[in-house]
Length: 595
Image (tube, rainbow, N blue to C red; front, side, top):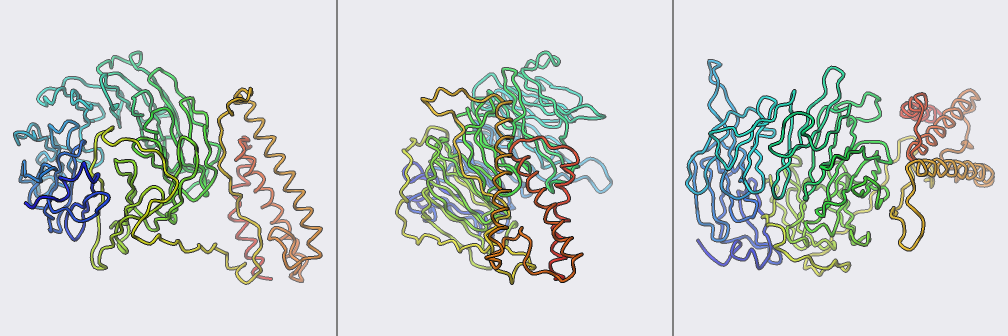
């Protein structure tokens, strides 16, 4: 194979992106060159279903619809080839000793059990160490401790443990009534295990933390947190393995407030402490991520525009980013930069923050992105538009975090990209550089985002634009007590009272503003805000009266929502009022259209 390309320069030019799509599978040299690697020969087949890098980025495996191949990343030397044309999932164990492969499970035509479809291969010898039947693709891969001393998988609601990659003997079992999910802790020994047991027959769900291999009953657990309202959970260990965040979700929100179901966020520490993380805005939890420093985490939550807040290990807010169009958060590998972004059904706006000083670095826009990932060097970012999520405009961009686009690739209109990912590296390989605020130079023109036109309902389209907003944007604010000030952090009760006081104050100011608006309205009726009584009447006093009453109700609902956002616990009848808002808005629009 030709030399001088991608893999050999990995340490000099930074990690490189891998691209998989209808044009085949290929590697691109990392920053700053972005040319196609000549070391790894492009696999032009259209059947590249699965790819995997080893954790340290030294090995690469892929299935091209004929075989599963493993190559050495430095020189693209073929190390192993397995006759597995139907493999759709691949994964290396943390120390590169084992390659796990999975293909769809099929039963024989006569209904008898199918052949094992999960294989574990010894990378050095190519020998199959063990085969299992694994029917579901979800959580298909066994989990290893980072040193490979333990490997675990969930079988029939219990967790089976193997030691030192000896799969002929089950070394330990963790059996609770029905373990539906588990996560091993990262880092050095001793390994800890977080297990989730769903609730049944009125009993709550719970997450328990154990230290391997002490599984002897509830007393041996390091910590336990029980909760209702959970159809599924996501468990996230911090890097130091001292705490787990649990996002508990229900499929359906019985109050009818959210299409997404209902989510709650719980914190559990290995020292036995646990808490519910209090989120100051109602609505879905879109994303929760640990800072790699393990001492704080960021949550993105609440009805749009969503809030984002950084919390410490006491679950107290440290910094509030205010509200914005966002549903995801990504810390850089060293944890010094945080990107808040709005992808999927949002416009792709990103906010790049310096975490140490909580200062905004840049606000790039990556429209139509379906994928985002930090480069292991902590300097670069990739955003991509991939099929099948979006089948048009496929391609990817490589950015510097200061907002400059350094490389942009768009596939021809008849082609698709299915996957883009960075070659991984172990922590500490790249030195942490000081944060820059000035955009780095780029040969590409900076993308100018088109100004977004605000949506206006049909009833308002031919009317003068008023300055009234559907919601108030909240600015970012530092929640830490200022150094040098003698003030102690507020207690939970004091905080609650302060929020109530602020909500009352805001409501009073709003009422005052409304009175002022009404007094100036007679002299400037053409600039009437939407919530003031319209100067044009229907001629039917009955209809005018209904419109006035509806606006009164909507105003009351707005105040209730503000009180809830400020932390006030609403009564049942007040929550029911809020749920009627959509119907009232529709009724108002119908009446106004009839004018």
